Image (cartoon, rainbow, N blue to C red; front, side):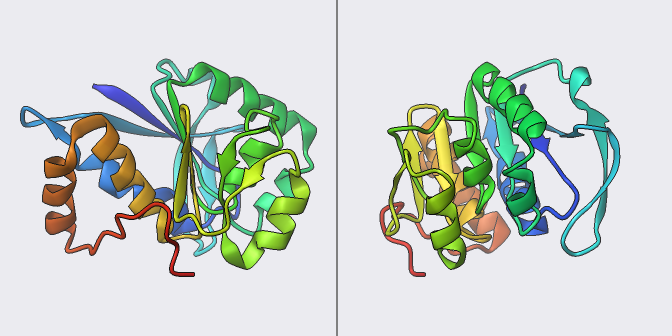
Length: 198
């Protein structure tokens, strides 16, 4: 079973993290779960979300497997984008992981590491001006619901994280698996990554 490591910070947007985690938690291979989900933060302990949900996290040095990293966004990302130590840690984690998924303005945090320079990426359309100004070396694609650039997946705002996670599952496990998951979740999947309705 592969690890889905979710990197949390105080004030993260709840659905950015838990929406993709829900979809990925349902992925099966021969009836067995594909991903074991663990939550991490720089300090460990309880981390509060935008909806005051509190999630218990482990410290980053307890991370043992580096398969898939999920980075949510939220208004708190605007402050984090300028915290050099946090960005350096994220850069190291992103380099080590086989794949990285960002939801919403989590893409800006990843972009601040320099790893998206020259690559296509997207972000929350309501925060578009801020996002693109923070990382002008990224090839920002406004029309995209989500972008895939090598091992990096970046998604638009909030609910797009679920669409993006399902897109990742298609790439890794096939369309039939996504159709099964979407049916079980009673979710209407926006399957065209190049067309954001917002």
